[in-house]
Image (cartoon, rainbow, N blue to C red):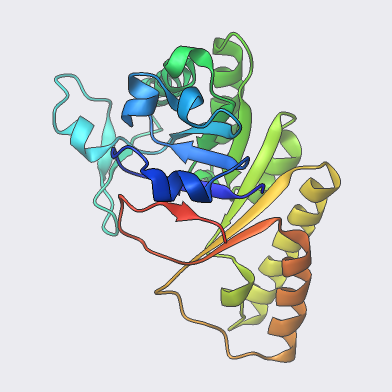
Length: 248
């Protein structure tokens, strides 16, 4: 099976979790013990292993305990996350250092890095996203394989692209409330077709609290095409942390 499993937390995976995961993509955060202390590759030897990084934020638990934190613009209203002030070079430098360290953890045996929140840099600051990926790749002994969450406009520019995640865009939740949304989804489909032609794995994920579309002919057309392009889908995922999100 070539699924995907994403976990934000620090608990060791138990037997029920391990039984559901075979040869797919596994994502853990850098402070998970299997990454921080080692063992990620040993517990998931047949999987492609990615460490979570985010060029736009600082983990709040870490930030509150730092003596010399990177500059931030404040905390966002939705997630209460400290957002890096990327207008200041030292903030981007800090994010790059964190990504390089994450890839070096577990003896440098991880497949690559899972990059979140790239949409926050697009379309206004694409140069920062490009610089981030380029500098991380230059600072590591071997360029990481990349697993990108959305950030559709960047996909054609990333040569070492392994996989992408369509968060909030599984076929069961795709629907349109305006012409602009329909046009945007056509752009997303074009991006997905492009990476599929390159052999990139495409995973989709929806949450249990997302509204389901009404089922118009336009909705069904896009839902059907998207379903034919994705490799795996995770539906009805929980938003709270400390829950394994595994494709079915």
